[in-house]
Length: 291
Image (cartoon, rainbow, N blue to C red; front, side, top):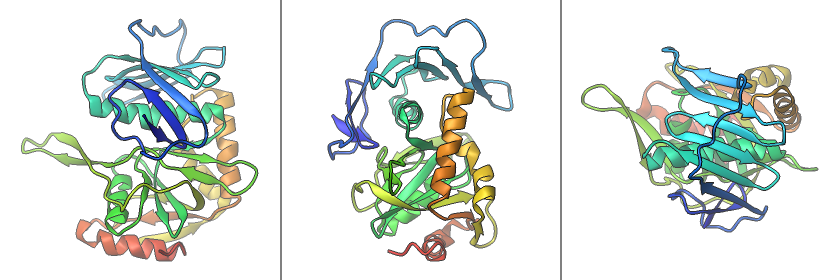
Protein backbone atom coordinates (compact mmCIF):
# COMPACT_ATOMS: atom_id res chain seq x y z
CA UNK A 1 0.00 0.00 0.00
CA UNK A 2 1.12 3.56 -0.72
CA UNK A 3 -0.47 6.96 -1.07
CA UNK A 4 -1.76 9.35 -3.72
CA UNK A 5 -2.85 12.96 -3.20
CA UNK A 6 -2.50 12.58 0.57
CA UNK A 7 -4.67 9.42 0.83
CA UNK A 8 -3.57 5.88 1.57
CA UNK A 9 -4.56 3.70 -1.40
CA UNK A 10 -5.75 0.19 -0.57
CA UNK A 11 -5.69 -1.98 -3.68
CA UNK A 12 -4.73 -5.35 -5.16
CA UNK A 13 -4.38 -3.86 -8.63
CA UNK A 14 -0.83 -3.56 -10.07
CA UNK A 15 -0.26 0.06 -9.00
CA UNK A 16 3.45 0.79 -8.71
CA UNK A 17 3.59 4.58 -8.90
CA UNK A 18 2.29 5.21 -5.39
CA UNK A 19 4.10 7.41 -2.89
CA UNK A 20 5.87 5.56 -0.08
CA UNK A 21 4.87 8.18 2.49
CA UNK A 22 1.67 7.38 4.40
CA UNK A 23 -1.44 9.40 3.63
CA UNK A 24 -2.62 12.06 6.06
CA UNK A 25 -6.14 12.63 4.67
CA UNK A 26 -7.69 9.19 5.08
CA UNK A 27 -7.89 6.17 2.78
CA UNK A 28 -9.24 5.28 -0.64
CA UNK A 29 -10.02 1.78 -1.93
CA UNK A 30 -9.44 0.82 -5.58
CA UNK A 31 -10.60 -2.68 -6.45
CA UNK A 32 -11.35 -4.78 -9.50
CA UNK A 33 -14.88 -6.04 -10.01
CA UNK A 34 -15.69 -9.24 -11.93
CA UNK A 35 -19.12 -7.87 -12.76
CA UNK A 36 -19.63 -5.61 -15.81
CA UNK A 37 -20.16 -1.95 -14.95
CA UNK A 38 -22.91 -1.31 -17.46
CA UNK A 39 -23.64 2.37 -18.13
CA UNK A 40 -27.17 3.55 -17.36
CA UNK A 41 -29.69 4.23 -20.10
CA UNK A 42 -29.59 7.70 -21.55
CA UNK A 43 -26.83 9.93 -22.77
CA UNK A 44 -23.64 10.51 -20.77
CA UNK A 45 -23.25 13.94 -19.19
CA UNK A 46 -19.88 14.38 -20.91
CA UNK A 47 -17.96 12.76 -23.77
CA UNK A 48 -14.66 13.29 -25.54
CA UNK A 49 -13.81 11.92 -28.98
CA UNK A 50 -10.76 12.11 -31.22
CA UNK A 51 -10.67 13.48 -34.76
CA UNK A 52 -11.73 10.06 -36.07
CA UNK A 53 -14.86 10.02 -33.96
CA UNK A 54 -13.56 7.41 -31.53
CA UNK A 55 -14.61 7.89 -27.92
CA UNK A 56 -11.92 7.98 -25.26
CA UNK A 57 -13.98 9.38 -22.37
CA UNK A 58 -17.61 9.32 -21.23
CA UNK A 59 -19.13 9.99 -17.82
CA UNK A 60 -22.52 9.23 -16.29
CA UNK A 61 -23.77 10.78 -13.06
CA UNK A 62 -25.87 8.09 -11.38
CA UNK A 63 -28.11 10.30 -9.25
CA UNK A 64 -27.04 8.76 -5.93
CA UNK A 65 -23.79 10.67 -5.55
CA UNK A 66 -21.81 8.18 -7.63
CA UNK A 67 -20.36 8.50 -11.13
CA UNK A 68 -19.39 6.01 -13.83
CA UNK A 69 -16.63 6.96 -16.24
CA UNK A 70 -15.52 5.06 -19.36
CA UNK A 71 -11.90 5.35 -20.50
CA UNK A 72 -11.38 3.20 -23.62
CA UNK A 73 -9.52 0.96 -24.07
CA UNK A 74 -8.74 0.59 -20.35
CA UNK A 75 -12.24 0.03 -18.99
CA UNK A 76 -14.93 1.51 -16.76
CA UNK A 77 -14.60 3.05 -13.30
CA UNK A 78 -17.40 3.40 -10.75
CA UNK A 79 -16.63 6.28 -8.39
CA UNK A 80 -18.24 6.36 -4.95
CA UNK A 81 -16.99 9.50 -3.18
CA UNK A 82 -18.98 8.87 -0.01
CA UNK A 83 -17.31 5.50 0.53
CA UNK A 84 -13.95 6.61 -0.89
CA UNK A 85 -14.07 3.65 -3.27
CA UNK A 86 -13.41 3.04 -6.97
CA UNK A 87 -14.52 -0.17 -8.70
CA UNK A 88 -12.63 -1.04 -11.89
CA UNK A 89 -13.90 -3.11 -14.81
CA UNK A 90 -10.74 -3.70 -16.78
CA UNK A 91 -10.91 -4.36 -20.54
CA UNK A 92 -7.26 -3.96 -21.58
CA UNK A 93 -4.07 -5.73 -20.37
CA UNK A 94 -1.82 -2.62 -20.34
CA UNK A 95 -0.84 -2.25 -16.66
CA UNK A 96 0.94 1.05 -17.20
CA UNK A 97 -2.03 2.68 -18.91
CA UNK A 98 -4.36 1.28 -16.25
CA UNK A 99 -2.32 2.90 -13.50
CA UNK A 100 -2.21 6.20 -15.37
CA UNK A 101 -6.01 6.15 -15.77
CA UNK A 102 -6.55 5.24 -12.11
CA UNK A 103 -4.17 7.86 -10.72
CA UNK A 104 -4.70 10.79 -13.09
CA UNK A 105 -8.35 10.37 -14.10
CA UNK A 106 -10.39 8.16 -11.78
CA UNK A 107 -8.93 9.24 -8.42
CA UNK A 108 -8.69 12.90 -9.46
CA UNK A 109 -12.36 12.85 -10.51
CA UNK A 110 -13.32 11.21 -7.23
CA UNK A 111 -11.41 13.85 -5.26
CA UNK A 112 -13.08 16.59 -7.29
CA UNK A 113 -16.43 15.09 -6.25
CA UNK A 114 -15.25 15.21 -2.62
CA UNK A 115 -14.31 18.91 -2.75
CA UNK A 116 -10.72 19.15 -4.01
CA UNK A 117 -9.69 21.27 -6.97
CA UNK A 118 -8.52 18.59 -9.44
CA UNK A 119 -6.43 19.65 -12.43
CA UNK A 120 -4.92 18.07 -15.51
CA UNK A 121 -1.55 19.51 -14.52
CA UNK A 122 2.02 18.73 -13.60
CA UNK A 123 3.77 20.22 -10.62
CA UNK A 124 7.08 20.60 -8.85
CA UNK A 125 8.20 21.65 -5.40
CA UNK A 126 10.37 24.74 -5.47
CA UNK A 127 11.72 26.09 -2.20
CA UNK A 128 8.99 24.32 -0.24
CA UNK A 129 6.15 25.55 -2.43
CA UNK A 130 4.30 24.12 -5.43
CA UNK A 131 4.32 25.51 -8.92
CA UNK A 132 1.67 23.91 -11.14
CA UNK A 133 1.53 23.94 -14.93
CA UNK A 134 -1.41 23.00 -17.14
CA UNK A 135 -1.75 22.58 -20.87
CA UNK A 136 -3.18 20.38 -23.62
CA UNK A 137 -1.47 17.19 -24.72
CA UNK A 138 1.91 17.77 -26.40
CA UNK A 139 2.39 21.23 -24.87
CA UNK A 140 5.22 19.94 -22.68
CA UNK A 141 3.86 19.24 -19.18
CA UNK A 142 5.79 15.99 -18.82
CA UNK A 143 8.85 17.38 -20.59
CA UNK A 144 8.97 20.39 -18.26
CA UNK A 145 8.38 18.15 -15.24
CA UNK A 146 11.33 16.01 -16.29
CA UNK A 147 13.54 19.08 -16.78
CA UNK A 148 12.62 20.45 -13.35
CA UNK A 149 13.25 17.03 -11.78
CA UNK A 150 16.63 16.79 -13.47
CA UNK A 151 17.31 20.28 -12.12
CA UNK A 152 16.92 19.07 -8.56
CA UNK A 153 13.24 19.79 -7.84
CA UNK A 154 10.94 17.17 -6.36
CA UNK A 155 7.93 16.41 -8.58
CA UNK A 156 4.35 16.51 -7.34
CA UNK A 157 3.07 14.78 -10.48
CA UNK A 158 3.07 14.95 -14.27
CA UNK A 159 -0.58 14.65 -15.32
CA UNK A 160 -2.80 15.05 -12.28
CA UNK A 161 -2.78 17.41 -9.30
CA UNK A 162 -5.22 17.66 -6.38
CA UNK A 163 -5.42 20.91 -4.40
CA UNK A 164 -7.11 21.24 -1.02
CA UNK A 165 -8.35 24.81 -0.74
CA UNK A 166 -9.37 24.40 2.90
CA UNK A 167 -9.90 27.54 4.94
CA UNK A 168 -6.41 28.94 4.45
CA UNK A 169 -3.52 28.53 2.04
CA UNK A 170 -4.22 26.17 -0.91
CA UNK A 171 -2.16 22.98 -0.65
CA UNK A 172 -1.15 20.60 -3.47
CA UNK A 173 -0.60 16.91 -2.71
CA UNK A 174 1.83 14.57 -4.53
CA UNK A 175 0.38 12.28 -7.19
CA UNK A 176 1.85 9.35 -9.13
CA UNK A 177 5.63 8.97 -9.19
CA UNK A 178 7.59 8.96 -12.43
CA UNK A 179 7.15 10.77 -15.74
CA UNK A 180 5.50 9.42 -18.89
CA UNK A 181 7.26 10.71 -22.02
CA UNK A 182 6.10 10.38 -25.63
CA UNK A 183 8.29 9.49 -28.58
CA UNK A 184 8.04 7.84 -32.01
CA UNK A 185 9.38 4.41 -32.87
CA UNK A 186 11.30 3.53 -36.02
CA UNK A 187 8.04 3.13 -37.94
CA UNK A 188 6.75 6.55 -36.93
CA UNK A 189 4.20 5.29 -34.40
CA UNK A 190 3.63 7.12 -31.12
CA UNK A 191 4.82 5.34 -28.01
CA UNK A 192 4.83 6.23 -24.32
CA UNK A 193 7.57 5.28 -21.90
CA UNK A 194 7.48 5.58 -18.13
CA UNK A 195 10.69 6.98 -16.68
CA UNK A 196 11.67 6.79 -13.05
CA UNK A 197 11.11 9.87 -10.93
CA UNK A 198 13.85 12.31 -12.04
CA UNK A 199 13.58 14.40 -8.88
CA UNK A 200 15.59 13.92 -5.68
CA UNK A 201 12.72 12.14 -3.93
CA UNK A 202 9.07 12.39 -2.98
CA UNK A 203 7.87 15.85 -2.01
CA UNK A 204 5.56 16.55 0.91
CA UNK A 205 2.31 18.42 0.43
CA UNK A 206 3.12 22.01 -0.59
CA UNK A 207 1.36 25.37 -0.46
CA UNK A 208 0.63 26.49 -4.03
CA UNK A 209 2.80 29.40 -5.17
CA UNK A 210 1.86 29.85 -8.85
CA UNK A 211 -0.16 28.40 -11.70
CA UNK A 212 1.03 28.40 -15.32
CA UNK A 213 -0.64 27.63 -18.64
CA UNK A 214 1.64 26.15 -21.31
CA UNK A 215 0.96 27.54 -24.79
CA UNK A 216 2.40 26.65 -28.16
CA UNK A 217 6.17 26.36 -28.23
CA UNK A 218 8.33 29.01 -29.86
CA UNK A 219 11.92 29.96 -30.54
CA UNK A 220 12.59 30.97 -26.95
CA UNK A 221 10.98 31.04 -23.53
CA UNK A 222 8.18 33.55 -23.11
CA UNK A 223 6.41 34.22 -19.80
CA UNK A 224 3.42 36.56 -19.52
CA UNK A 225 1.52 37.32 -16.30
CA UNK A 226 -2.20 36.63 -16.62
CA UNK A 227 -4.91 38.77 -15.09
CA UNK A 228 -7.12 36.56 -12.89
CA UNK A 229 -10.28 36.74 -15.03
CA UNK A 230 -8.36 35.85 -18.21
CA UNK A 231 -6.51 33.06 -16.41
CA UNK A 232 -9.83 31.64 -15.20
CA UNK A 233 -11.16 31.46 -18.76
CA UNK A 234 -7.95 29.94 -20.17
CA UNK A 235 -7.43 27.39 -17.41
CA UNK A 236 -11.03 26.12 -17.16
CA UNK A 237 -10.49 23.39 -19.82
CA UNK A 238 -7.88 21.86 -17.48
CA UNK A 239 -10.38 21.17 -14.69
CA UNK A 240 -11.17 17.56 -13.81
CA UNK A 241 -14.85 16.95 -12.98
CA UNK A 242 -17.66 14.54 -13.82
CA UNK A 243 -19.10 16.75 -16.57
CA UNK A 244 -22.45 17.52 -14.96
CA UNK A 245 -23.51 21.15 -14.52
CA UNK A 246 -23.21 21.18 -10.74
CA UNK A 247 -19.80 19.49 -10.95
CA UNK A 248 -18.55 22.00 -13.52
CA UNK A 249 -19.83 24.94 -11.46
CA UNK A 250 -18.13 23.66 -8.30
CA UNK A 251 -14.81 23.07 -10.07
CA UNK A 252 -14.99 26.51 -11.73
CA UNK A 253 -15.63 28.14 -8.35
CA UNK A 254 -12.65 26.36 -6.80
CA UNK A 255 -10.37 27.46 -9.64
CA UNK A 256 -11.56 31.05 -9.18
CA UNK A 257 -10.76 30.78 -5.47
CA UNK A 258 -7.23 29.54 -6.22
CA UNK A 259 -6.63 32.33 -8.76
CA UNK A 260 -7.72 34.83 -6.14
CA UNK A 261 -4.77 33.80 -3.97
CA UNK A 262 -1.91 32.85 -6.34
CA UNK A 263 -0.53 34.43 -9.55
CA UNK A 264 -1.01 32.87 -12.98
CA UNK A 265 1.21 32.99 -16.06
CA UNK A 266 1.08 32.11 -19.75
CA UNK A 267 4.26 30.25 -20.75
CA UNK A 268 5.71 29.30 -24.13
CA UNK A 269 8.57 26.80 -23.95
CA UNK A 270 11.38 26.70 -26.53
CA UNK A 271 11.18 24.17 -29.38
CA UNK A 272 14.84 23.28 -28.80
CA UNK A 273 14.79 20.62 -26.09
CA UNK A 274 18.48 21.25 -25.46
CA UNK A 275 17.54 24.74 -24.27
CA UNK A 276 14.84 23.46 -21.93
CA UNK A 277 16.90 23.05 -18.71
CA UNK A 278 18.00 26.68 -18.84
CA UNK A 279 14.53 27.80 -19.86
CA UNK A 280 13.01 25.88 -16.95
CA UNK A 281 15.14 27.81 -14.47
CA UNK A 282 14.35 31.11 -16.20
CA UNK A 283 10.68 30.16 -15.95
CA UNK A 284 11.02 29.75 -12.17
CA UNK A 285 12.86 33.06 -11.92
CA UNK A 286 10.20 34.80 -14.02
CA UNK A 287 7.47 33.57 -11.70
CA UNK A 288 9.51 34.57 -8.61
CA UNK A 289 9.57 30.97 -7.36
CA UNK A 290 13.26 30.41 -6.78
CA UNK A 291 14.97 27.33 -5.40
